[in-house]
Image (cartoon, rainbow, N blue to C red):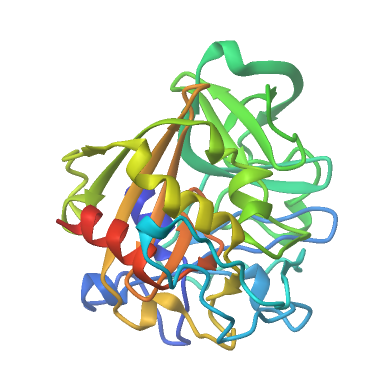
Length: 313
């Protein structure tokens, strides 16, 4: 199983799910793991956990005002009307998987009582700040709840802060493979796209952009096509004002992967060299694809459609 499969897998799980089953690729969406109030657990592919699907979650409105239902050329960006924020709470850890169930660990570690999960994105050595911890990779998919304590991890390495990023959201784990970014999206509320894409991911600092079709993404084929940043200015501006919605299993909207929406993939390279992956769904949802969280910016309309079709072509 690849890291791409792991992030695409975070969705609902049926009671009878075992191994990979013989379901079509698009229907094998899973999600994994949970977060303890002080010590979170690992995300386990094919045994998916939706942190925002708990009763403590504040569901987003299912039909807020569209924030991009204007033409790209008229220079007008209409903010969304008032809406409820999406709260992603800490959540008790689930029990270990049943015997015989296929389970691969997504990379994670617990630091300062928060779970950080791998993003499959890497940072250059110049972005590494202070070393804050060492982790030994002592957790596997069969570990018990009592083992998910401070310093627990599924990957061994040295943990560093990342210059320019809030360490409560992002840290880096340095291994022989390099400095991989690990993010934490629990215990926070997201109202507009700016709460995630600007305040935490800083996509306003993009210096390059490219897209990959979903078919090529599935095959892990790098068929990137570069897009002029100027052409994305309406899209990014609208994304910042778009309402955030919960599209996870158990939400009012339902699991976004259950609808079979067409998808496309947009990547933004920042001035610091970090790449931010975005997943676009044909219904107007935009998801940060460095996280399994099913919280999306909702921005249907002409501006979204233009970029979506550009990325699908």
